[in-house]
Image 1 (spheres, rainbow, N blue to C red):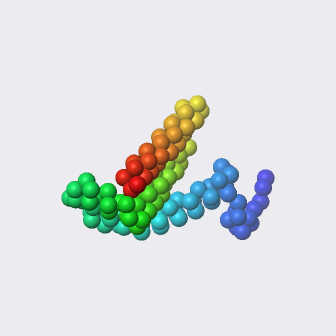
Image 2: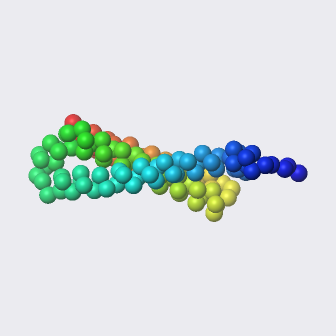
Image 3: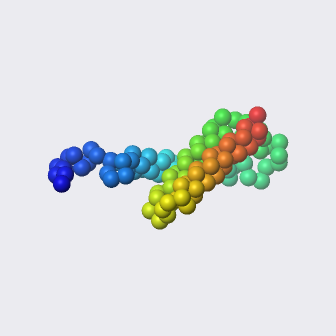
Length: 123
């Protein structure tokens, strides 16, 4: 039987081996989303209703393009980590692994397509 002090428990990563790291990733991405999402809504709202050329010029500037890219990356990776935590909790065996791979592939594909569209729009 393993007797651990409170300090040793806090320094450890739990039974899964990565719980503390996952917790900090989620906390940091949550804080980033709190600031990025309103900034994205404002920048998207400013471009709304313009002609195609005006939207191209708007996203050709660095601030709207960076805010949009950061919001896309942070938002999708946050959702991916949440989905992976749910998969780990409720699925087991081969279906868990396949779903985990599918969610990861889908999220990275969404990021790649979104960044590609943003680059095409900005350049």
